[in-house]
Structure formats: structure tokens, C-alpha cells
Image 1 (tube, rainbow, N blue to C red):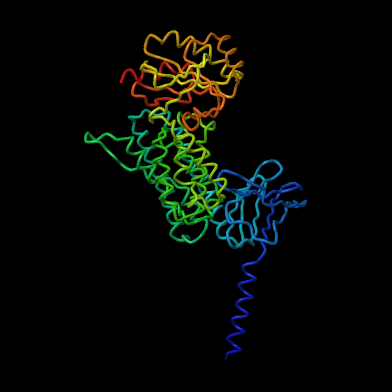
Image 2: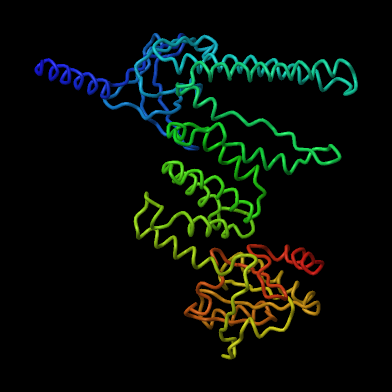
Length: 465
């Protein structure tokens, strides 16, 4: 009996080992496809990579196979003319697909892969749905909004949408444990909530708020396979850049809501944190004070305790950079700077009596600084008597070059230069010169990362409060 049990355990171990190590074999035939090469293109979020290639024979047949399984996810098979087919890969990677060159999706037949059978059934359904929807929509545009025909078309469109919803729900119920169902469900939008004001009118801002919050309801954030499809990156981009007001406080709030959902889901945590941080890295965003988002991401999420994917040296560098930015975020009290003017006299920002101060940080050889300085000279002459002073800080230069620049452009405001840059370190962050900061009468930073042409708008807006 003992020998029999041992034999069964041994055979089971062989079975599971061979199953786990089973090599992929994806056989594809496309009638009418010329001989050449086909490429298996993998996806990670919003990036594509070449996972494999195969030789297409004269009959349009080719095979993707290798020793190790392909990473689960959505793949494209790319042909020489840039047409492609899609396929889903999960644990079972031994199946066949057959189609025709001029009807890639319509004629697709799949054997041995339920995920891909369902995928192509869905692709054909969606294609038909879109054609019918577009036809009705075009008819709708020609009709009087008050006509009976208009109401009839609207009803047909609503039925089309309801039928599609029912189709998907039936798939999700019957095939809920498939990768296809997880992928397709994750790509769906939430229902738009009915949120009305007391007078019955829709409150659009609140609808957008709930839609944004509900956007992730159908996404299983424990399923790392979805990161190897375009769904997650597309949702994240829409969530952060389209459904969230592009103001640092709003972005930080939306980011926190989402990232907090992934604190125990490391792969999603890593992707969301890095994507948002890179999106709002200085010089990569036109948002005023994008540094506020970047600093929040670094200081709260890319920490020694949480950034498991990075080493301590890199984390230290990022934390140091975030610290350098943190003192000069919009809304913060403006840091004081004291440095010597051309006569060697110490001049401080806090000694300035004018209600508004523009801190102008520049380099005498910088092309954009040379372009903006004459504009600022003109602006200063116009606004000096309206309560404006400029505090110019020369960077990465020497005394001779600095003073020559001041003389050449007849710069009339307070100018200082600290060859060591110690006087501004971790006070006013500069990534690209020129950098302008605007300080209000309460000595708070009210604007940054702007050009001279935008100063009047900033000042007028604040003065009008």
C-alpha cells in the first residue's frame, strides 16, 4: 500500500511538472497571407515589445513556440503590411487559429482556446454593434429633435446599448473564470449615475466625480495579467488626465484614492506610482506646479519602506530631489533669499516693500533667458508703480558674465548672484531657466513655471480677489 501511494505521488509530480513546463505551440494559418515573417507583439501597459517571431510559409502557415511559456496577457500578431490579429494568452498556450487575409476577424476560427474563441466572438459582435450604432446615429443627425422619428431612433440606440450590455453580462456569468471575462470586464465603463439638483437638473460635476470613482469597479486589481493588456494604462490615463481636474490638489487626491487601493497589490502599486510620478515630473508637464504632484508621489509612495523595486541609493536621490522642490510649491510661504548685488551689498527678498514680487532666475547665456529678459524689462517699467518688484537671481555664471548681461539689457530691478548657489539651495527649485515665481502681499507663492506674457493675468487675478 505504501509503495502504491508513493507511486501515485511520483506520477502526480511528473504530471504537474510536465504540465507546468509545457512549451507553447500556437499554430496559425491565414489564407492569402504571403510568405515572410510574422511577429508576436506583447503589451505591458502602454508599451509594446517583440515577444517572438515566426516564418510564414507559402500557405500562410506559421508557428510560435519556445521552451518557456509566454507571459499571460494580450498579444498582437503583426504582419508585413502592418495588419494584425489579437490573441489572449494565459496558462494554456497550445492552440490553433485559422482565418483569411481579407477577413481576419470575421473568418477567424479557433481550436483549443476558449479565451480566444470568446475574444473573436466578441470582436465580431462589437463590429456589428458599431456599424449599426453608427448608421442610426447618422440618421439621427438628419432628424428634428422633436419629431417622432427622432424618438424612434433614440429608442433603437438605447435598445442596442441594452442588448450589448446583456450580451456581456451573459458572457461574464457563464465564463466568469476565464481571462477573456476579466479582460473584457475591466475594459467596460461604469454606468453614469443619475445625480440631480433640487430643481431636477443634472449636476454634471458630481456625475463626473462618481464616474471617476466608479471607473475601477470592474477591474480586479489582484489580476496582474491585466497589466499586460492596454486596459489598465488606458483607464489610468483617462482617470488622471481626463476625469480629474488638472490642478495639483485634485490630481494628488485622485492619485491617493487609487493608490490606496493597491497598497497590498504590489505590481499595480508599482505601476500606478511610477506612471503618475513620471507624468508630472518637472519639464514633462505643462501644468503649473506639476512639482507638487511629483513631490507628493515621491515623499508618500517612493519611500524606503514602499518602493520595493528600487535600491536605497536611487530612493535617496529621488527623496533629495523632492525635498529640493518642496519649499517652493504654489501656496507655500515664499522662502527668503539673501545674496550680494553687483556692488557687493546683501539684498534680501524679505526686505522688499512692494506688494508683489517676481523672482526671476536666469543664466546670462541661456537662449530663452535672453529672449525673456527684454520682455520682463518692459513689463517691469509698466508695473513698477502698480506695486511690483523683481528680484533677479543669476545662476551658473561668473561676475564678469553676469554684470555684462545686466549692462547689455539695462536690467533695472534688484539683481543678485551667489557663485556657490548656497543661498537658494532647497528654496526656489529651478529645472530649466528662466524660472519665474510670483509672490503675493502675504508672501505666498501664487504662480510659477510661467512666461512673462502670463504675468499680467496672474497679477490681475490676485489683485481682484
